[in-house]
Image (cartoon, rainbow, N blue to C red; front, side, top):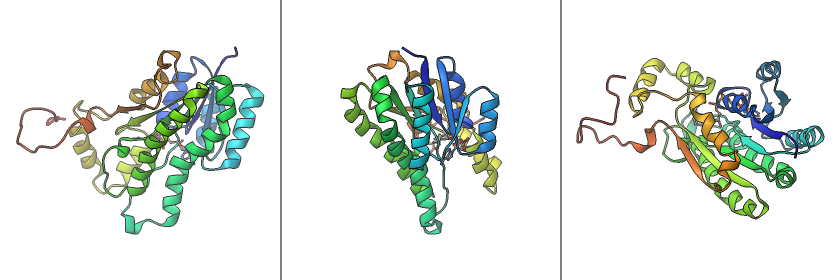
Length: 259
Ligand SMILES: NC(=O)c1ccc[n+]([C@@H]2O[C@H](COP(=O)([O-])OP(=O)(O)OC[C@H]3O[C@@H](n4cnc5c(N)ncnc54)[C@H](O)[C@@H]3O)[C@@H](O)[C@H]2O)c1
């Protein structure tokens, strides 16, 4: 049996980079991204860095050919690349919808299909990075919410379809994680610092998450110790979606008033 081979899409930044840095202890990690400067950094760090747009079937075909030729196996495929679009529905274009759904959903369908033979031959696994936006409503984010809900739903469907072939499929829903994606979001808000402070307060653990908080759950799902876990969704959100704002009805706990 050859050395373990993982692919992490969007591995040039944030959560994906933390996953790639953890998975490298097990073997080869192919970092896939469309950001050329992030890829150059990943390459300098020793990763096999491949340029691809995860919404493109051609790019997936090139990537899979590369993996087959260079490694001959694929043990873990982490669909992490994602993009957000925060805007009112009536201010969103068709192009906005297509960008979000292509990057977040079609990428998982197309990429997993193209990797299918390699995954089956290697009895590999797939981990899809969704979001807590799959579980709760989010203002001005209908396309993003739809995309992440679809990722959680298609994870279950693929898990059922792939189980007889020895391929596991699971999803992880990160909460508010301080990555360039969320930093850009706060920077674009008129009162970004205040919004961030309020968001921290709503987290029972009293802080936002870091990529290093999310990566271990994703990596765990790629391990032999998770052999019986498939079709499951894991929430890593510091307790945010476990809470509900009862106002002052049950005062005394659950929110970090002094955060
Ligand atoms: N940060 C959060 O709070 C948060 C919360 C829930 C879910 N998520 C999800 O986690 C995943 C990673 O997000 P992050 O916060 O680390 O973001 P990030 O912006 O820091 O990193 C995402 C990476 O994906 C790459 N990427 C984007 N579109 C791509 C495409 N079409 N093809 C190839 N690469 C592409 C980007 O270049 C970037 O390097 C995303 O799926 C995101 O939706 C993030």
